[in-house]
Length: 365
Image (cartoon, rainbow, N blue to C red; front, side, top):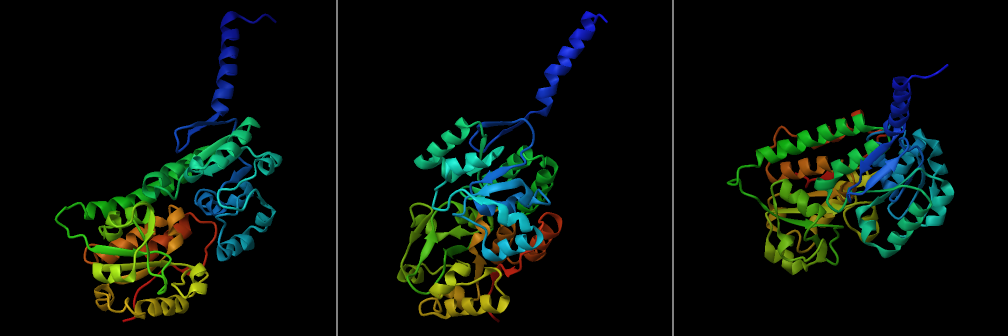
């Protein structure tokens, strides 16, 4: 059979369109184009706790992950919740454990179709060498960011993961959920005449060796968006820094916010988060604000204080924390906002597992 010129042209067009249609292309958070022949199904995560981020857009994120770095791993209660539903989580191979330490050789041996690194990795010389080795082996690398600039980069990063793993619709669904709640906060605080309370944000809070606080970056952005003034911004040069208890007392903030987690138990600090019951969290918070110096703060005397889970800071779920802060700073403006309901809706609509815990705490009345 002899093919006519138009038919040959049609076959050529089909051949040209076929690979293009199958090609997955995404621009990562650094503006680098990442090409995959098809959505990734064997991923290495540069940060283990980003499995929970994948869980927002995949019913079984464990099935996608071949390896992970354990420097920033899932906390044990979260790990247990995933293990109970997805026993194969124990088959995920470690590819590094130290701070910004990753093994290119271990990654290459897993033959993944995608490696996901973070914005912090971009500035580490050792990580740059590892990335070059991984890409030289033909393995694509994509950068995301849920930590350094969370409000700016979390949703774009989620869309990047959605694009590269074939979950664009789920990523967009979460983006709409997130954006609608963020817009509600910004709209209600749009009037420049609204008074912004002066906020002291005590991170990794304990009554001893006071006080670590935030100057710029993650929590500063949350405070500002929620309608507060971060008093540490004028004192601390950089993301984190230390001030004295005398400074805190002299600064006399309108609102005192402490962050904590299970890692603070050994230091006698604020204990809350994954796997922590409400009674334990409340008791640790009461000890903190009753300590010498803290008890005399005007914010404590007036009940304008709260404790929040520190690890809200590396996931788009931080939208619930921003709601909580907005309601704490401006209770009259946000009477109808329920951050606990926001978390419950995230669990019901997006998360494959529910992790028990206590995420915030206020003084006993």
